[in-house]
Amino acid sequence: MHLSMLRRARPLLPRRALASSNAPRIKAPIGWGGLALVGAAGGGLAVYYNVEKEKRQTAAAKKQTTYGVPSLGGPWTLVDAADGAAVTDASYRGSYVLMYFGFSKCPDICPAELVKVGDVLRRLDGLAGAPAVKPLFVSLDPKRDSLEQLRAYASDFDPRVSFLTGTPQQLKAAAKAYRVYSSISDDDKDADDYLIDHSIVLYFLGPDGKFLDFFTQATEPPTIVEKICAHHEALK
Figure (cartoon, rainbow, N blue to C red):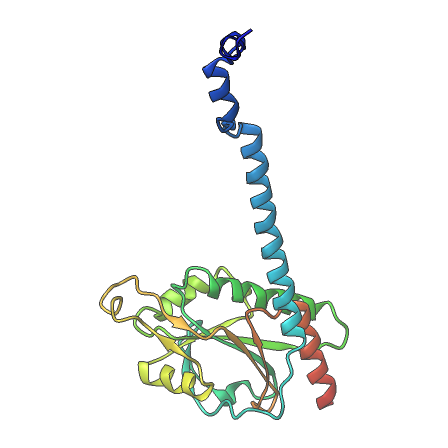
């Protein structure tokens, strides 16, 4: 048989089959089950991140070490919102003082710190030989924190907390004595609902009125109680 006849006799593969064999495979879109697994994995990572962040903040607070005693504090004169009486730094001599600077219109941080102060007081109440501590809340907002406003605000927290205010000059002097940072953005200065950016620190003072220690937002109540008791034992 002639070679050309053999070539014609050989069966030809369908073009369609050849084309389909080389075409890329198209993957089916991910289903709802797959999406759920991806979402669960993402949520798990977020929870893990938050837990690890809290652990590191707590560890950092426990390892906090200071050398020497910073020059903080000084004379000040303010007004106690409870009765409108003038008080000074000397009014609390003989007592340990836990001092915080904030403002009553603060949406979350100041209330959280005041709740923490209440927790610290209750923990101290349950410890034999623990010192009594007088908590003070000093306003950074003389424009809105009137005596009436602070009295209403005080009803949400431990009754042992004294809320102090004063003239702009008096409050500025007290904040300066403790190197408290506070600022209102230029965009909010003329608004009625402005927020104040400020330091988030609890200052711990001894019975002589001198600065002993400070506690940041990350410091948990058990650690604060432990340090307060340690200072008390050292001063006996």
